[in-house]
Image (cartoon, rainbow, N blue to C red):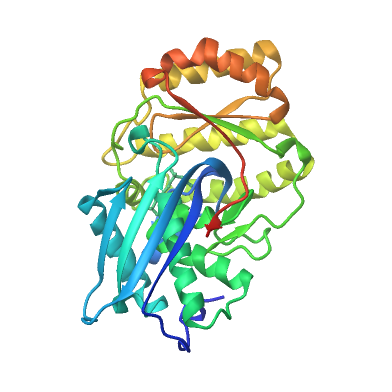
Length: 361
Ligand code: DP6
């Protein structure tokens, strides 16, 4: 597939108005995407677990309008009008207009809600952009008379979501999604995420992710600024090479179920992401003292209990605690007894690997 394959030929039907609703989850990267080229093309492939409970539900209502010269839309979060969300969506519409030529024909009302608190410091761009992309695909499907195959629908939704926010392209399907071309993964592409195509060991079934909310504030570094820091970064090329190698390693780990190798790889990826930010110009420390306290506690617990619990981080201070389902009881006890004290207001979110987005009728 190349970009122009996503440009529709023509629309056979017309519509005056309608409404579509999709629920789409967040995801947590095991091998991180950090650094991109023009047009949201990643510098390296990444792979993530799709989450189940952290999600966005977006209802998109649309009605034909007279003036077709510009985009016209309003955004609501939990019923409140959010004009500060508009620039990001305007940019998204500009990027996808060539692939969705109906965008200027309608006025859109975008009503969105998150299953997690907006101020939790959890990125809602992956779930939000993927939910919106799916709603737009539902419109396109009507306009071509319902002719779009499920496979193309999903692929184009992921392609569009990527243009909204890179990691959003990994939120359409579950339970593991790879984005970015890699020789060892058939069908992988820089343009969209694909469901991991190989058999996965049962150790990874229902893998648990408990998100410890260490800092619920606004992100200190936006992802756009963060990715840009990789341009001219002294370690960039090595990092991109390393990520490609990590994908080959993860492939073997997912096959064999080697949890020790999994923990080593996932933690190394998280710390490397932060190391990139600490060594860029300008530099940032996105962990907080409590992030480090938690990491050390996890390491001590792991050693003492012979556990397979590990952590990963996004570009912020919150900690994702990852562990196999059969350790749920013990690890949750450990979290409540020893880690909650380091969370802001004692808040954390229990999640588990999920299957991807759902159309809500
Ligand atoms: C650290 O997808 O938020 O979470 O493409 O600029 O929207 P944009 O970036 P974004 O970057 C996420 C980076 C990350 C790692 C990851 O999810 O792979």
